Amino acid sequence: QSTTFPNGSKRKTIVILGSGWGSISLLKTLDTSLYNVVVVSPRNYFLFTPLLPSTPMRTIELKSITEPVRAIMRQRKGEVTYYEATANDIDIKNKKLTLQTTCHDDNENMQRELQLDYDYLVVGIGAQSTTFNIPGVYENANFLKEISDSEKIRLKVLKNIETASFLKKDDPERQRLLNFVVVGGGPTGVEFAAELNDYVSQDLKKWLPDISKDIKVTLVEALPNILNMFEKSLIDYTQTFLQKENIDLKLKTMVQSVDENIVTAKMDGKEVEIPYGVLVWATGNAPTQLAKKMMNDLKEEQTSPRGLLINDRLQMLGAEDSVFAIGDCTFHPGLFPTAQVAHQEGGYLAEQFKLLHQLDQCKWEMNTANTDNTKELNKLENKLNEPFKYIHRGTLSYIGAERAIVELTIGDNKFKMHGPFAFWFWKTVYLSMCLSFKNRALVAFDWCKTYFFGRDSSV
Ligand code: FAD
Ligand code: UQ2
Image 1 (cartoon, rainbow, N blue to C red):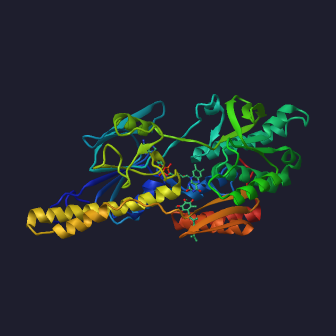
Image 2: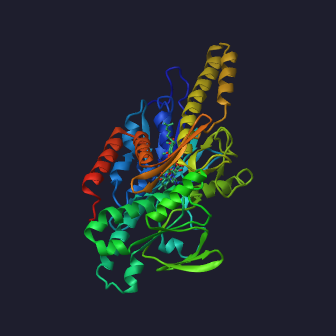
Image 3: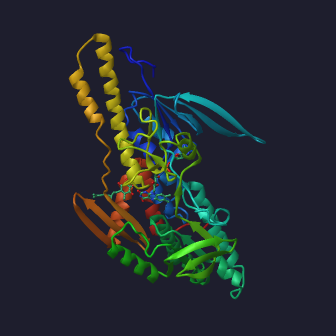
């Protein structure tokens, strides 16, 4: 793709950081023939996070919910460049950024650097899991955010089961190994606890009935209720249901510290100790290294430690003319750190970039051909100034044993469902949201496979 358009005007460069919900949704809707588009991300695939909790116990295979960035790029109209690298410094004043790759050599880590110039920068770098500085969490717990987390959790669960079946029934170590503790009562924590319980009651029960009886899944939440984004009746339904399914719900329980084998928590002012074999930490978002650096560089405007501050047009405060920020790396009242928000923000930016291009062309014509485009210019500028409006469509969560809860918002009306029918709805919604036909087919196939043959128990 050449650096100029046929009329002689400059083709501007957009650098998109990240390959998550926000960035990929932008890439999929952006007219890439209007710009030089460069995507930078250390992860060369998109990950369909809503189904990640289904992967550790292999209800769904990991490969079914990833899509390579290059497969997405290839479907675009214009050329797109991709660098597998991490952006580690941004010179906002001079519109330059520094990328760093890590090449794994046989005996050393060789890092290569690259400088890039941009006209527009889109920051969609997500967030990182945080432990709220609770001692021992980082060292002993598993997060559930990336593919590698899912694999680690699986290995631990299966290994503990094998070790436990090796130990005598009255050995307290056996019970500890079989205590699976999930911290965080949001959809991620609930869905993973549910999947774990499904594995135990639907699969393990057939192979190792003794072990399956002794496995205990505990869900820990600091607030008085789990799934706080849902309506009260659905919360009550879920809490009752989980307890019936033998998940030990510990509400109003604040984790204080974690050591190798024990979670220490405060419950109603009392200290409780929960011995565990596997601990999954499914709560808390914090800014990444790069986001912190950017906040520090723009101290005057970036006054929140919770995320990059943006205006209603998703422009980053302090660099409104050239930097946009979307998704979990941002903080804005009314916009939650969800895929649903990031997805809509990406779509909005694609439209903004189309308008920005039209505006540039309009100005170029005015300058070179002396035509009077004032009217069109005003129209475009008005359109460009329209703020991003988030439309909340609803929230869903799987809760185990082929049941889900669903809350839909259509216009001003709210609809809610729970139970087996909601589970089918949940499946249909997530299938329809998959990024590619390939993902859709693989996920559907995995569900069939699990239904007919059960979940795989091999490591
Ligand atoms: P991400 O999708 O996290 O992507 C960030 C990208 O930036 C990654 O590709 C990363 O590699 C890259 N990156 C990081 N640092 C750099 C750097 N320095 N330079 C370049 N690239 C960088 N939301 C829902 O709405 N519904 C759900 O059901 C749901 N379920 C979830 C389940 C799980 C298990 C998890 C973890 C999250 C879930 N979410 C859900 C939340 C949702 O995944 C996030 O809100 C969403 O991913 C945010 O999108 P994002 O583009 O901001 O960041
Ligand atoms: C969504 C989205 C997500 C979500 C959810 C939604 C890509 C992966 C839950 C919302 C969609 C719903 C509730 C379906 C609406 C269906 C009808 C029939 C109105 O949009 O963004 O991220 O998790």
